[in-house]
Amino acid sequence: MQLYLIRHPRPINAQGLCYGRHDISVDAESVAHAAAGVRGLIPEKALKAARIYSSPASRCVPLARALAAPREPGIAEELWEMNFGSWEGQAWDGLPRDELDAWARDAWRYRPGGAESAAMVATRWERWARRVRLSGEDSAIAVTHAGVIRVALVAVGVLDAAVFLQAPVEFGSVHRVDLAQAPAPV
Image (cartoon, rainbow, N blue to C red; front, side, top):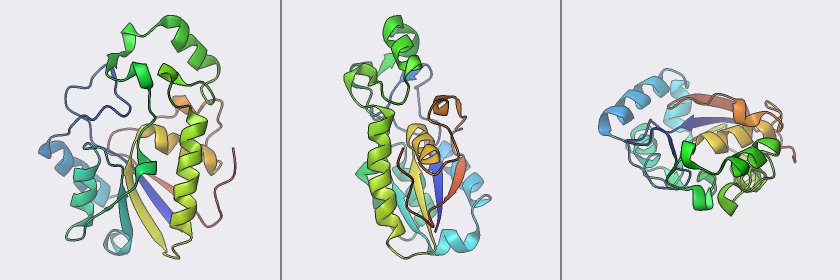
């Protein structure tokens, strides 16, 4: 099964913020631009037939709806971005240096802001990916977040957990993974 993971469009007024689960909107122009770009990167057959899923975040749902129309996308709680706890909505440059350093030393297991680690995000993504794989469909599409995409790429062996935070995941980018086999445990 081919799974196309799409990062949401650039959110409004989020430059320099740690926003994780903080719900930030996207404007209609960004959604239209991202949808046009995505349509050029995913085969038309997959766009028409694949089940389309979305994170519940308001920066993801509009793009998922644009891609799924006239259908409605399925909302999957497992596709939420990492929860950054006390860091949510704070400027990155205002976060405690010692906490940022601790996260850099163990990006996979450290819980930024006291909330959720990348390993925890991977566990929920793997649960969702198994369910999608067992659907028996040829492909699926999910509009989600950079953190979820990175842990998915680790789970299928494309990225190493030691350097996953450094992988570029641009707004509106598409990342294809093969779910022919269950995601490998990390």
